[in-house]
Amino acid sequence: MEMYLIVALVILLIINIISYLVVIWDKERSRRGGDRISEGVLFFWAALFGGLGIYLGMFTVRHKTKKWYFYFGIPLMVIQNICFLFLLYRFIEQINY
Image 1 (cartoon, rainbow, N blue to C red):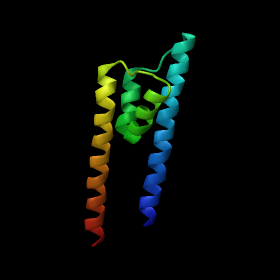
Image 2: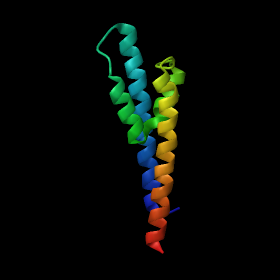
Image 3: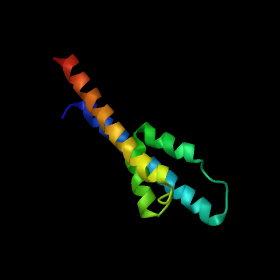
Image 4: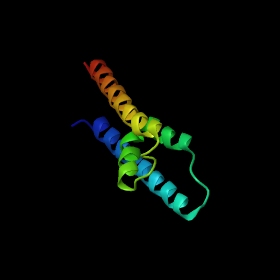
């Protein structure tokens, strides 16, 4: 596996871990009645290739699962992220040949 691909996968893993932790943090804040993280920030993390972390966080701590725009929007963001990464990978492969 090429080095740039390994670096990209590590970065994606870090982004998704942070996204997952943001959902857990927001859930804890909601339980304690503290200041909340805005829904826009959660969607920002999903758009920043952290959609899988947000989605896993939604269902592991049961957070935002009743809101239709999270229930349908986050999986769509994951699909969009995967398509973009696939196209980027294909583009880089064409440049290397």
